[in-house]
Image (cartoon, rainbow over all chains, first blue to last red; front, side):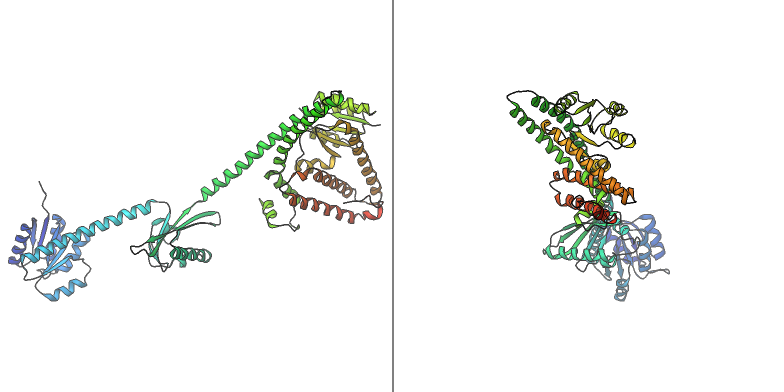
Length: 344
Length: 200
């Protein structure tokens, strides 16, 4: 069974009320109630949860239709069509924030009412869809740990997610409309402003890393291409990469340390190779073999190979670091590269 | 002719060492390890000790430390003799205690000459030191001066291997040489020693 949509009629003139009811029934609505005052309308809306309200503006009781609509909107998301005999009323409701989706000026015919109902229902459905879409987008942008920001071409904030609000240290304040450079420390904003300008001009995204005290931040600026191929907005995405940096550095250091351990092993091995070489050389020199020269040449070949391993060791980072630490005093005038090596 | 003590755990090295140097008329004592070598030194005063490094259980550096800490053996010149290249850390730590560092394999026909040179150089420096001690009151400075000269000698001998960093090594050696010059100035060395003897 198809569940009929429910409508509430708020009208203190009986004949108009009946006309409205007939028309609603014809449109396939179930009329959940007809009430004559604003107070009753608020109550009925709470109990019947209508899908549509037709609301007269001048009513019995203290509350008029506009006040009642405002009250109902606080608890119910329902399209409301105003019905009135006085065109003056229209200027009043246009100025209100109760969000009417349509109005009808009495007298009206069925056709006009039906069109007003269709438009109101359609608009309401579209608004709901839009709000739903917005909720989806907000849920998505807030689910990522990265801080996100949408900027216009004057570097003003259009939208931002919770992580970005937190990062800007401005939770709770509405930052939309603020110029981004006003929120960052000066040095950062100069760099950022230049980068943002580059992205607007070139249409190419950029990515860069910056360090603030112990923290490493990766910033990406993505252009948003509009329907007319212009770039009027950019997305700024920042991410804390301190952990990644730490592990990268650790991996690098460990790699070097492993190589140096291997080289130390070679050093010990080299000693063990050279001892028998020394012995062979000695025995050959002591004997009167006709191949003395050839054997000595072969010994030289082996020794040269072993020496190449020695060179690797002596050129290693560990040995160099030791040299710098041990010998290079601050007073010594040395090129920057060396000094950097010494500070490590 | 000289008396030489070789300490090496490889029996073949000890055998050849002894065979060659005896041919040149030297008196050779051989020990298979650090402890045995120190034991021999209780009764022996060789002109030179030739010391292997990688030995078990007492390695060459430990043996060297024991020799140099004992006043009875401290003055005996020592040269290391190893299949392993010295690294700069070893040169800095032990350089002042050793006269030279020889890397295996060496041509034994030249060995007698090499060892004779080491003993002569050691003896020359020892004489200089004695002269200096009469005129320079700061004996620690004299020790530091000769220690630094030995370290520079060893660095210059081994560090040209650092092909990718010759500039860096040159700077380091230059720095050490400057230090030597400063010490010479503060000891007024050029006045007391014969010309040509003092070189930095």
